[in-house]
Length: 136
Image 1 (cartoon, rainbow, N blue to C red):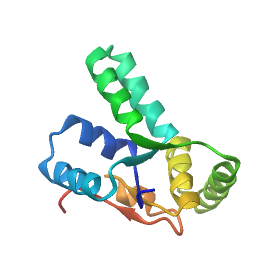
Image 2 (spheres, rainbow, N blue to C red; image 1 turned 60 degrees about the vertical axis):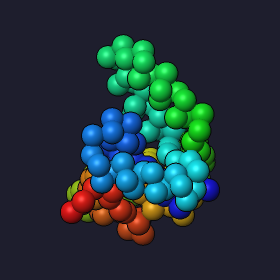
Image 3 (cartoon, helix red, strand yellow; image 1 turned 90 degrees about the horizontal axis):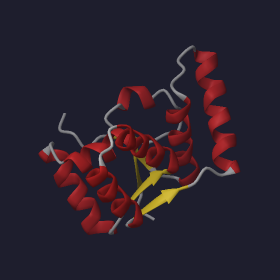
């Protein structure tokens, strides 16, 4: 499995193809590992947006991307990890969305670095390795 888990914003940017730095990083990753890994939550977030816009062509392209990716399911281990993350963030008064907590928990359970454009947001989570494909 690739050592990276793509967050929804990063996978969306890869699909749009507008940021040359993100495209370079994505090509390098695919050359090294042959596929992307992302959470089933990311699949849901992207698919719901495409369906809401009735983006038939984009939906077909996304489905092809999904067939050539490792989509990580919500397991009991992920749910338990997510509950731990929620409790920590709640106690710190720094909650993030449940979807983001589930994506972060997926990365932690599988020992993956989360690639996101919302680095500061996810750095609140202890033990989560976070990276960005955008130029600083």
